[in-house]
Image (cartoon, rainbow, N blue to C red; front, side, top):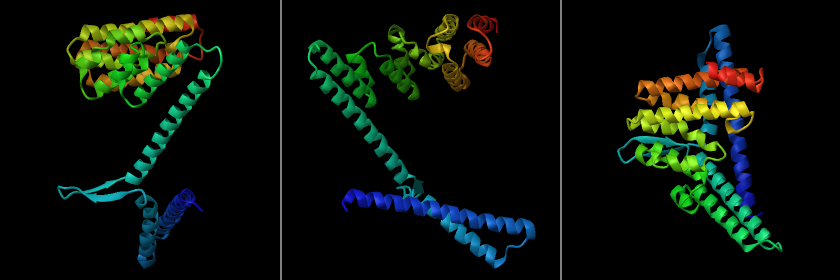
Length: 283
């Protein structure tokens, strides 16, 4: 039995122990509660069962928690084992994905009649995807200025850390790259950035542009924003940024757009595309 098999067996044993402990412990605690509710009895037996049940339940939780003492003397409890396991799984999945894409490129390279130019384009696309996976968005944008995903991720990253001026710097570049329509996903965030910078007219223009795109996609019956799932995502984004909006006109524009989206989603499975457009515009 090699080291990997031993580690796997230990992992399963630990998981089984945690599950059994939590089931038995929960059962004991439930029994104590039932007896107390029905007969109003607790006594020594109830105390013992409560302690044992708590210990058994704690086994499953304790196996994922690491206790440490901070420099200031505070006791800290973190899910280090679980977090480390999840991080390792994500890292392994990313590495597997990158290796697979490289294998695909190498396979295509060996196929006759495939031009070197096309192979170089594939390699460049792979470099950009790897940079995005590693959150090196500016490097990815430098290689591929029209990569809408890299631009979106960079805008989102800058907004998270409050760098609104840096985020809006890529607004025009996002519009150029947004041929698929996926870039509209960050319009709510951009509106928030302009609002925070006290440039509310631009924030309102962005929201109106988003509304116009929804109207257009509904009228055509297809497009990124013609489906209810995307509508719900946009609504969630609007709800997330609305409490942070300072300008009342921007906030009112968000409310109006959200109402129209809600109306469209409600009617989505009941009416035809022309009726949907009418309902959307008449809210």
